[in-house]
Length: 295
View 1 (cartoon, rainbow, N blue to C red):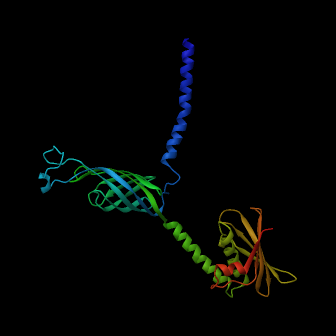
View 2 (cartoon, one colour; view 1 turned 45 degrees about the horizontal axis):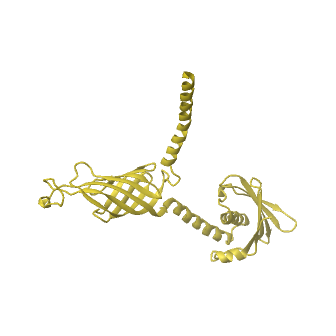
View 3 (tube, rainbow, N blue to C red; view 1 turned 30 degrees about the vertical axis):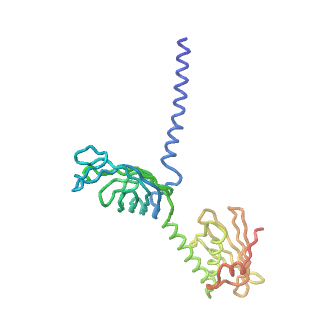
């Protein structure tokens, strides 16, 4: 019977130990959600939600005025407050600045502080109250506590959800991409040597149908003579990894077509150029100038 008890408790111990990693993993998952902001995030998040809690007013001439239901001589009894809350936070890496405004007895003010992972600790720039809690692109949830010596004491809980998200880095990348595409269009329509125009065309085409472009510095042209016209081969590396090359048929200084080959990806794509695009062309005209076929 004793051996049975020992075996039984041993089994319970083994089961308990086996569950511990699962609990730890679940805790880690909750602390590091997929919607958390990267440490080097630069951007703004707007939130909307509500707050509720207690406020104890500052000592003043009004302290002699009776407060309904308050039995304290100084009349500094907690008053329940609550209402809507709007928060805007601007993230500059781990530095956070922002502002808030709310209804139901909460005065508007600015916030400043720092973010560590998914946790923010911010200070009210008016009275020094501490706003602490989880902050990410989807929400800001936490508490507000006044510093001990503040004339007015706040003790609140708040929960606001993200309503607007702006990633400054991504916006800058998109702007740089648009400027580069405009530059490539002008170069293709220029009187530059055919190799330079072809390099620009290769880079521009990869913008249109691949999630990553080519590394411009790696593009190496190779001119080869053919019986009818000329053939220019361009080798390049892909930003997303791997490499490829393009073969262009040149006729009287014009690019007739470009065939793209991607041995690492097992893909091929052909671009037939009818007329070279100009900087006044829009997207619809681009569609008419070239046709794509994947053998």
